[in-house]
Length: 164
Image 1: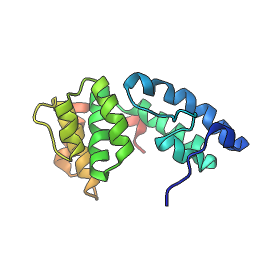
Image 2: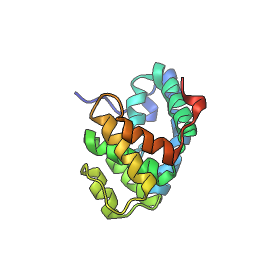
Image 3: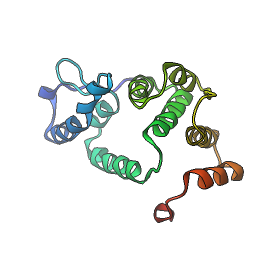
Image 4: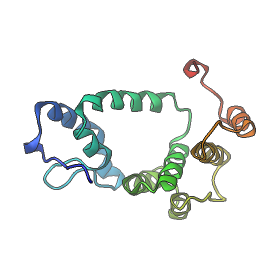
């Protein structure tokens, strides 16, 4: 079963608040080259899902914003991680959207294709390779192996304020 996609004229009061907040987030989508809204204004992708669960939408948005702030990765490395995870999960919209965002961040079409297929491009930077390796290891389940963790902390650092 798929969740319904709501046009702006179909929204409840709670959904309207989510829609208005989401509009600010999706404006840059067209600049990156992917579609986040239909012609009639309905939100697509994760924003469409959130329209179905307005009670959690703002908390999810706040969590996403805080994670982005604490992430010490470059925009390219962040896109490497997102494409690695999306490829592993076969997340169609994430692959679609972040292929465009990744290209905007400087990833080549070949790098994007390899990451989306679950591979590791040989021409990534050290930071990008480590970020992808950490994401892949976490996707396999369990604890991040010590050698990967140590290499990530040594190379990328660790924000001790975010560690509980």
